[in-house]
Image (cartoon, rainbow, N blue to C red):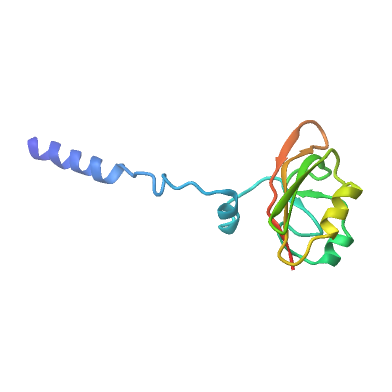
Length: 140
């Protein structure tokens, strides 16, 4: 009886307990995107989800898009952070379009300068809102 109890206990402790693997690891948004485990609404600008843009891409784009959520969702607020020569300027938008001031600031960027969208929210077609995730854009 004692041997049976020890055998069952050993099997139970080693065979049924499966500790969480890498439970201590937490990924930031960029790392999550790298491993393609991030889901949900994301911002599209000039047809891209972050990455490299040319000056021509910026010249031809004044509207922000949202993908990864209900079709017909529209961005209704965002903060645009433009970094030119190491200095960051923040603009606040209340629609899915860049203001003339925002667009002018983007057109003045040079190779290596960056911009990103923060605090972005979209209105769903039926009811409700969703946070929209965005990646950094770099001018090439």
